[in-house]
Length: 236
Image 1 (tube, rainbow, N blue to C red):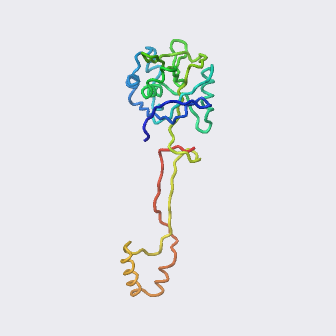
Image 2: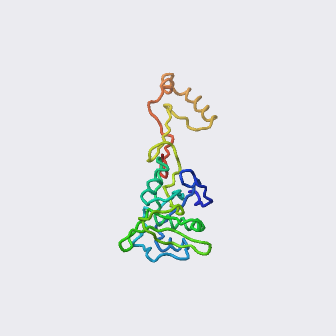
Image 3: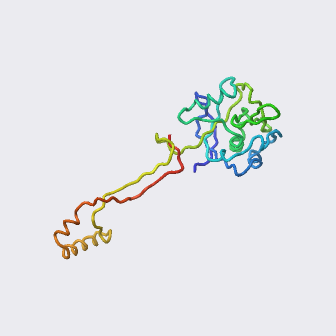
């Protein structure tokens, strides 16, 4: 399993950072633990487990990037453009669990720009809200803002996708490789060359020419040498 990484962000032409950063999200830690590990100085009391639950779907190993809208953008447009930056392996908006782990790994990132998780939408009173990290030189915080906002160019959006160990041009699934070979009709009693020679000389003395010829006939059976499988990867 690769090490969780965090580093400087170089923005690509598409608006995504170019580093291959990964995070490991463990939903079994629960809402309170993940919130505490993010270690913000302040958070909005309206961010509750009921409104923004941590689920099993949040778990696993994820790639993450910060998406720069490079201008004003609505929430639906930000999601569509984020997904379109890699049609073969689309990014999706982060949820609260991803945002909290990101904040733990990159505690200073939110000091430069507010970072939004558009994948977690909760109602506070009658309005839909999304969580975001923010900060300054002296403090860091976790707050809520309206989903219906038009976000200005100062905001960044956390994008995630499942971490993929291989890229082999195959569809998602399980890969199995079987190696077969054609056996002879008989097998020597040992893999040592000296034993093979003794076995051959003794067999000539005790079997007829007809038996020898039958021993050299190619078998119609095949033997499985090994089979290997990979359950941990998604192929694209």
